[in-house]
Image (cartoon, rainbow, N blue to C red):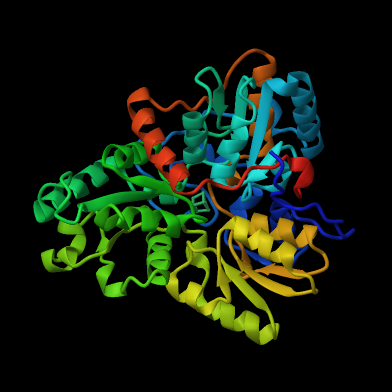
Length: 451
Ligand code: SF4
């Protein structure tokens, strides 16, 4: 547990990495910046009673029926000031000591991340939990699929806690297990026996799922000879899959699939889209027969906001700007950028720049703000001029973190996430295949990071 996730840098006096503070200032008229929704200035418990993903990037996405809902947060947490919540969290963590590990995703709000023992991407954080097999509880300040992954990798007696059950992920929700099973059935009508290799030793389809998917989807993939990938190792994983299958069924993120396969030389015409609301995904039998990568019709509403126009404007306003975007962005945006890479790639690229540089970054605004505050020698800004965080990450407010930690102090486990055994076993198999294809980077303590 020694690799540095984010190197600590002196923070300039006036740098405030808090996206919440930026939004509060916009709403109070103290800032001329724009936000995608002024409701973001309210506590997320305001939205727990309503269906939907809440304000932020995913507010236009359709939430599946039966998505987990969060019960009402007690008034003492809703009405507490920021300082009171900070003090409660610090006191609860001190009382719990090594009994608890708090994990904070790169995209999480600053007010929560500052209390995290580790900061990283979803898989780095799940692995960070492995460093603490004796901790009774792992509090995952991220979204639902991340807590599920931590549960898959943690000890059975450890409780993985998601502070707000409404913190889902609209992209993960776009690949529903029933739709995926139906897709597999339809593909078997076209390709025949899906399990028996042909004369070249290749099966018709290898399913590949992005880490940003439910445990049920990871379990499906594990049962059908497939594998999980991250945005860091998607190419390695696709190479693994092409050694075993004629083609890949990639879900849920069409953009990561398309950008990765295109960089590997797969022609766009061999990447049909699978729209689960259309028969045979909306493609013809000939298109599917000729395909190399079948792309599920999913996307991240945070990364879909980035446009080529924004890149053109950044280049016009900042000659020499270095544009780096996440591979969940649409292909045209990735093509127009100077570089594309995972969150880990982005922060390493910034830290490796030896000369003062202007960076325009195409990823979630909380991470960009924190990178800007931690690297004052560079000018770093979000490509999207509108302050619009990930809707679901934003549901984890310090009030919820204080509530679950106080519960542990009182001997009560609140908001435990548990993956059923029949799903967990094949899902772990799919993760193990990924680890065997290429191990991920090791996690680091937050003392060495930039929270
Ligand atoms: S940033 Fe996108 S993929 Fe990540 S949790 Fe938010 S909606 Fe899901």
